[in-house]
Amino acid sequence: MSEKNRQGKRTAREKLAAEREKQKSRDQRRRALIVGATVVCVLGLAAVIGVVAANAGKDDGGDAAGPVVAPSGAQGKDSLAIPVGKESAKSTLTIWEDFRCPACKGFELAYRDTVHELTESGRLKVEYHLATIIDGNMRGTGSRTSANAAACAQDAGKFTPYHDVLYDNQPSETDDAFADEDKLLDLAGKVDGLDTTLFQECVKNGKHNSWVEKSNKAFQSGGFSGTPTVLLDGKNIYQDQSMTPAKLKQMVEDANK
Image (cartoon, rainbow, N blue to C red; front, side, top):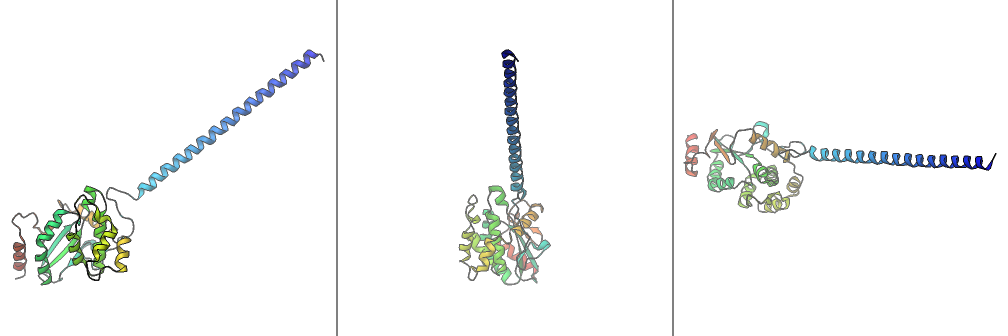
């Protein structure tokens, strides 16, 4: 074989080797792109799953997770009413309220003494229904957290005094101070015998949160215009511009004759 032929074959082999090396590099790049794309897809899918999981327990009302546990002695449809007063009373005052609601505090301070007098004398029964509309309007969780604490106080037989303490210490409407469980526990110290380990656990664990959410849904579906909604034997007396504590007392006394 001539030198020229040998040189030609060597050049061909070198070209073939070079082409194989180029093909090998292309294959490596292709595999790298496939792996990279797969990782991106997996990460993207994980991100989507994460978002879905994060939103799965949320809705516009911020529903609490867990079983609906009504407070001790709750009555009425779905056990959503906390009763105060004697069952034998001839008049029933139904109150829908929110512990963050300034108008609820206004009603409470104006009518509290009269309502206490009538319930303690056996002439009036009050059914309290708890709502969380301020949480929805102003954002936050103070309405629900304080309502849960009030339900915990009901478990301990201390609903009425703790109810009064919450209104006496109500923060401004835009201040979500009642979302702080420690604040609610501090206020429990103002009620004799309430600040117990059981009460603390009930508040911190949100034992009645789902019950509060169910109560709020009942309020929303009830066609009420806002809190407080106050019904005396089914009649909305809060909308009565002439209503006074004295008039309420007279109406109850007339019903008891």
